[in-house]
Structures are given as C-alpha cells and as structure tokens.
Length: 252
Image (cartoon, rainbow, N blue to C red; front, top):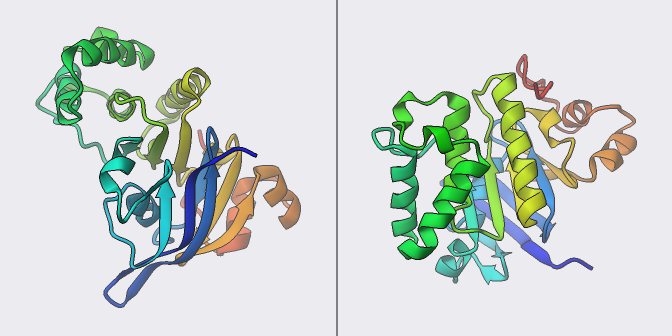
C-alpha cells in the first residue's frame, strides 16, 4: 500500500464562534493528484492553510510528509510547496529576482539555487521572460512564476489553492499542461483546490467539502457512479446544493 503523504484525523478550525472546518478525516497518498472541491466557505482554503502550518488547528491532528503540523511546523515546511489563490510575488522584481529571493529565504546555497532556477524557468516557459518585471506579466505567466517558485525547493507535496482563478481558458490549459509535466517528471504529490470543477476530473481522488464537513470522497468515476450522474459538476451539485457561478463548471 502506498504511504500517506498527508494524514488527517478529526482536524478542525474555529474562528471565534464560526466553525470553518468541523472534524475532517482524510488521507492523501504519496504521488497522488488529489482534488478538494466545495463552494465558497466550505473549508477548502482553511484546510490547506492548516496543512501548510499557516493556521493552528482547533482540534484534531494532521501529519504532512510524516510530520505533525502543530508540533513540527518547520519540518513540514521543508517538504511542501504552496501556491496561494492570489500571487505573492513581488511585482516590482523580475521573475528571476523573485526566485533568487525565495531561494535565499529557504537558505539554498547559490550552487544549488542557480541551476534549479534555470531549470524551473525553462520548465514553465519563462526563460525568455526571466528578466521581465512581474508587474508586466499576463495572468497566466504570473501563475506559472508562482508555481515555479513553489517547486523551487523540490517539495514532496505541492498545494495548489485555486491556481487558475482569473485565468482565461487558454492560460488555464497551458498551466495544466505544465503541471502534468511536473508530475510526470518528479512524482510530486499534488493537493488541488479549485472552483473549476472539471479541472478535478484528472484527479486520482476527489473530496467534496460542504459547511466544513466531508460530503463525499472517492475517485471521479466512483463519485459519478454513486450519484448516478455523468460529470463532477453534477456530483458537486448533488452533495452541496450549490449552483456553480457561470463559467466555473467547464474548466475551459
């Protein structure tokens, strides 16, 4: 049996009187492409932030890359890459400068950082734009730079929180081609949250969250078969009762 990259038991988070995540049980296997779906406020981003040690749990436990998120935060962070919903690149720096800055933050020596930076620039089609300011990039190139930075440390686990939000269909398609290439080359575990439900069709397994609780879990085929429907969008509607905003079910 494949080892667990992420092991969650009774994980929950409260913000005052608001229960953002109830008691989540979840396991993501090493090398798996795992999708986390749900309407706004379902607990998707809260889950990612808990697993990435950006929030402290209110209850339960989670282990990421074998380390407890509450007690071994530094060890967890050494094994993960994280791409936020909104870019966190410095818009006044070039792509290369952003990557060099990230390398310094992670204490990567120059002899390691330089070839890695060159590799990710080429891998994500950024080489010709490497000296361009982030401010002048298209949304698709900016997201590619975000992900390039997220994998610079060669993480075992990559969190993608709404990575294609705001991109046009062509840019979304190009970004997914790059992510598929990354997975094929490195075998990295990917946990994806997305509003574009069709983007989760290639996932090995999918979890649906609603009101901070796990509503469904399985492969896309299993979930569609169990619900008696033909698409993940219909699975989403069946388990949450939320209609997707126009344009968010087709995945481009």
